Image 1 (tube, rainbow, N blue to C red):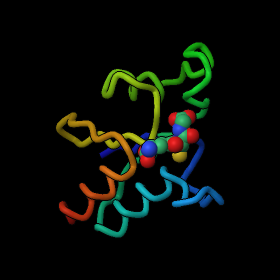
Image 2 (spheres, rainbow, N blue to C red):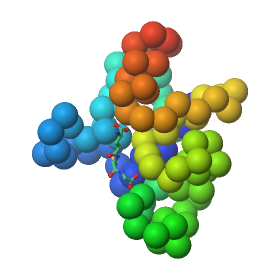
Image 3 (cartoon, protein in one colour):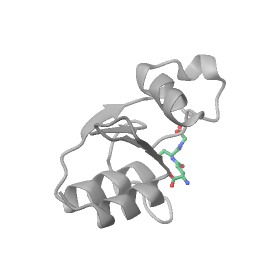
Length: 93
Ligand SMILES: N[C@@H](CCC(=O)N[C@@H](CS)C(=O)NCC(=O)O)C(=O)O
């Protein structure tokens, strides 16, 4: 599986935590070892400033360039960190 993230999976002071880190650690805690794809950019900026492979793949999968996005090995996409956390809890490795 591939986890598309922004710039990494580091903690941030944001209330509720860093969404990409939350998704990543939920997957690890469930026994998964996702390939982390750093997408860089910042989704609210114009698409031209988000023209990275990770952002383009996020758009193909979800219609939006926001991350985190989880891509399962069968191509299924799960967008939004909360949905990824829920998926991880329901699908231990
Ligand atoms: N509700 C979304 C929020 C996602 C979110 O805010 N992602 C951060 C990156 S961790 C962000 O800045 N997204 C804009 C972007 O993709 O650049 C979620 O929980 O996944």
